[in-house]
Amino acid sequence: MNIRLLSFIGLLSVGTAHAYTIGTVFYSNAERATLVAARSGITQTAVYSVTGIIRRGAGKSVAWVNGRAVTETPQDPIIPTLVIGRDHVVVEGKPIKVGESLDILSGQRVLRLPEKAVRVKP
Image 1 (tube, rainbow, N blue to C red):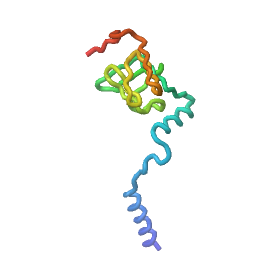
Image 2 (cartoon, rainbow, N blue to C red):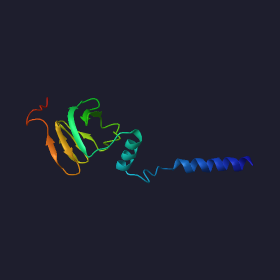
Image 3 (cartoon, rainbow, N blue to C red):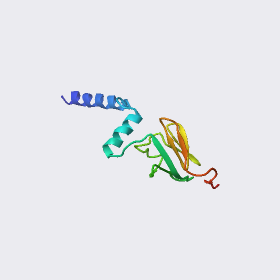
Image 4 (cartoon, rainbow, N blue to C red):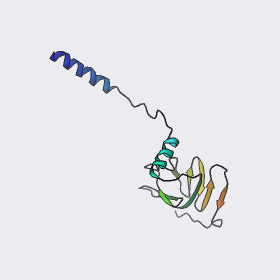
């Protein structure tokens, strides 16, 4: 009886040692972000406005998008594809400069600041 129990436990441990995660089965990252945002009461929009960026060499960089401070890590539930550059952010593969608004669906850009009004310090 004890030998059977020990061999059963041994088989279970071998099976779990080789287990792997199957990842996302039902939802993509964008779909999951939409669900998380809906549950938290935050509304998603197709228009993104960038009002500022703080780029840190040794720490987390922060961008202000649509009036909210967002970071690349951890991923923001509203903007999971965010990449913070030196003088712009990239949302869904489209760069947006500081002081600019972009409608992702239509591609229309609105620059709120005059050209060369934003300076990037070295």
